[in-house]
Structure formats: structure tokens, C-alpha cells
Image (cartoon, rainbow, N blue to C red; front, side, top):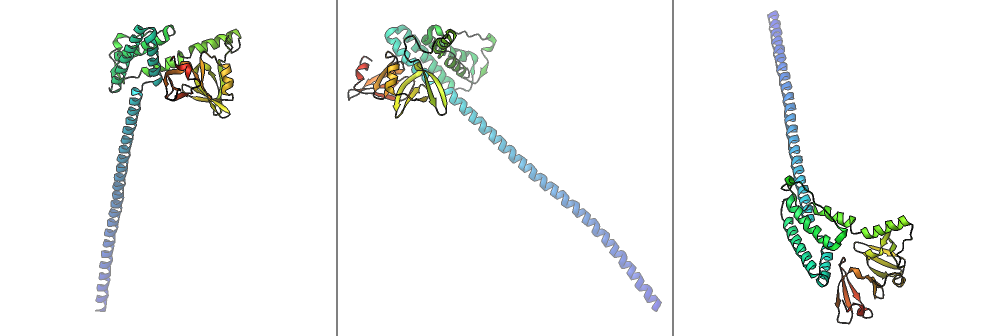
Amino acid sequence: MAVWALNQQAGLAEVWALAMAGLGGLTQSMFIALFFSVILLYFLVTRSRVIHVSHALQAARIKNLAHEKHMAETRLHLLQAQIEPHFLFNTLSHVLSLVDTDPAQGKKMLARLTRYLRSSLKRSREHDATLRQEIELIRDYLGIFKVRMSERLSYRIDVPEDCLEQRFMPMLLQPLVENAIQHGLEPAPEWTRLVQQLAQGLPDRPVTGYLSWLRASRLDATYLIPVEEVCYFKSEDKYTTVVTRDDKFLIRKSVSALEAELDPEKFWRIHRGLIVNLASIAVARKTLNGGCTLQLKDRDEVLSVSRQYAHRFRQM
């Protein structure tokens, strides 16, 4: 009996060992399956987040591109709608002068200006235009300058016929023509005279002996300014401000000293501390106190003329 009992216990232990061995194998398989399931789940979640972030970045990039496109279109429309104020003021002033001297030419110039303004304002509201339309606009623009500059301006427009119907953004040619005239033609007389003087070894002073050039400063730079480009001189404490069409400079010279060196046929003193270039005056208006005011062609400010000098402008 004792032997049989021992044999029974040994059998049960063997069965229990086999059962535990089988359960251990099952647990190991489940652990491996769970491990790979976690890895797969992590991969799927990570990929989902990457895709979400990628879509968000792409949406932000598209939004940024749309904003940049909108800003570029806005700047382009502003450029298209811009009419050079100096060109407009100078043209109207020239028309006023032609009314008395050559009415027919003044009427022709005013008609060109009207046609140019109507076409340019219309182009600024359109999304595209043909090359033919742009060339017509440039012809009117150059025609106005031809009346103003006479022999100084000569041009030829040569465009192949098969290109005239090509479409592009409107008013892209005009800034190129404006820059060509502004930087290539308008300063031509002064530069021509300067080159001739340098070639001949003559001093930088006209035959009349009046002041021709000014050495003026702005910030830390020094500039050489033709006197003809000055709109007016204004006394400022120890300095005198030199005001041109586009900028302001300083010189260490009093208004009284300048008056003695400037051509009296071109520059008039209008106040104790003001000298104006007559060529820069557009309109002179009387005031109630016996003086007058001057509206300049190329500047927005209005200059006051004291009663002491107002008699000079009565004929204007």
C-alpha cells in the first residue's frame, strides 16, 4: 500500500508539472502576441499623428501661399493704380502755360492727358490686358512728354504683329518707361553741361558767375545738387534747408549769402528766411493781409510770401 501511494503521488506530480509546463508555454505565446500588438498599435498611432501633422503643415503652407498671393496682388494693384504725381502736376502746369502761348498745342496735350488718365484708371481695375492696349497707353504717355520735351525726346515702338494680342497683367510697361524718362532724360541738360565742362577743363561755374551746384549734406553723406533742381531754400537756425522735388538737405550758408550767389532771374526771396525757385511755382494766390501764397509744382507744401515781397507776384 505504501508503495502504491508513493506511485500515485509521483504520477500526480508529473501531471502537475506537465500542466504547468503547458500553461507556461501558453503564457509565453500570449505575451509575444501582446508585445507585437502593442508595437503595431504604437506604429498605427504614430503614423496617424504624423499624417495629421503633415496635413496641418500642408494646410498652413497653402494658407501662407494664399496670403502671399493676396499681398502680391494687392501691391500690384496699388502699383497699377498709382499715377506719378510729379508727372500729373508738371503736365497740368505745362498745359496752363500753353493756354496763353500755344492754345492748339495745349488743347492737344490736354486731350492726350485725358485719354491717358481714362485708360490707366480703366486698366487698374482689370485683371489682364493685351500688349496692343498697353502700347496705346504708352503712346499717349510718351506723346505728353514729347510736347513737354520737344527735341529732347525721340522714341520708336517696334513690336511684332503676332505679339500684340498676348495677354498679361496690365500696366507693367509704364513703370519701365517712367524710369527711363526720369533717370535718362530729365537730368540730361545738367549732366551734358557737366560732361562738357569736365572735357574742356572749365571750372564748375556758368559764364554768368551765379551759383550752379551746391554741396549739401543729409545724415552722414554729402551730395552735389544742381541749383536748378532746388524748389526753395529755408533758413533753419544755423543751417539752411535745401528742398528739392524728392528730398531735403542741409548747408552751412545763410539765406542772405545764398541770395547774393543765385541768379535773380530764377530765384526770388519771398520771406526773411525763404528763397523760391520761380520754375517750381505752379500758382500764386493773394491773401487778405496783402501778401500771397505759392503752390509749388512738385511739392505739397504751400509757401507764404510776406507783404514786403508780394508785389513781385502781382503779375502772376
